[in-house]
Length: 353
Image (cartoon, rainbow, N blue to C red; front, side, top):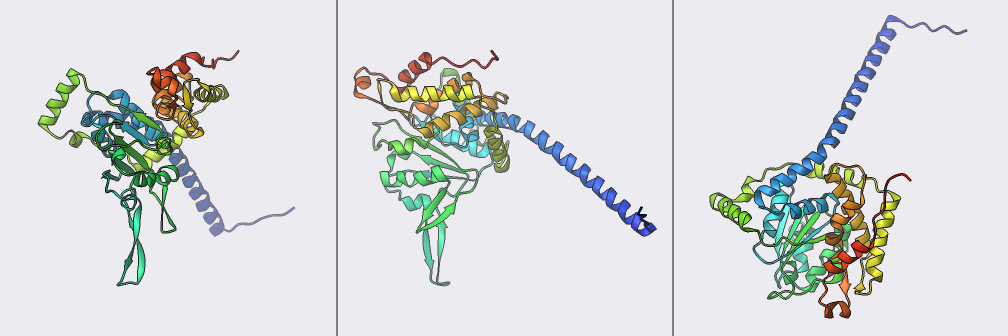
């Protein structure tokens, strides 16, 4: 049998160590509670961001909500509409409400790829090459009238949007996180515009249309704009770090196997439909799943339901499909074809049998 004898000094040291361990444990527990409380508040913050944007953009609640969903799903947004309905105002309001570093570039025929990605510059004083960042080196990049520039410049966004990086002179430069592209374009056929390539369109998570305001919304816009600049009314409701946390929470929203099958069935239907020449790509399938998670998140749910998928199906898929000659001759639209697919595809039941 062994006996251990500790001096008063050793007992004192061990006692202090025990107390310090207890204090550290209390600190860790406190941090854990703070993290849990923080996560519970993030969904409320997302709704607060929406309310702040609504101060600058009058009326368009559904469009604002879906832009927020796309941001939460780490996606990119294409706003297609006629000039003057508030597309740029919405993008600027989101950048201010989320307190993100934003850069804005108006696409014209003379905009070069280097204006977006940056370029390497030689400095004679030091005898070295330096990277000069382009417009996309920010958290939120606003591309105004993206379909007015050359295809070469449009293609410079492909790597940026898909991989979150730019390659200049063989050197890769990562973009800051989070990174979001909000692009606006005028309808096809407007003066000086050209169609975006399908590879570019497919990288936008959603394509949204704002439309004209009604008479009450128009009067509210008049009163607000005459009094002051509505963007100045928007206050930061979150920051970049909190947005990243929200995006991580959205990825953890549960999707049941039956919901996965429902998503796959809808996408397969776009590829086999007799009116569709080009269906939704696998990238579009992933975007549909992520947007449905964001829809559930804003509804304060921890799982995805068929209603979440139906809410975002049109916005995710309409710009990704190409109709064939038969559909065009019948004056069908992508939205009409997708509506028929939704009606013909029954949603799964999530109740236990």
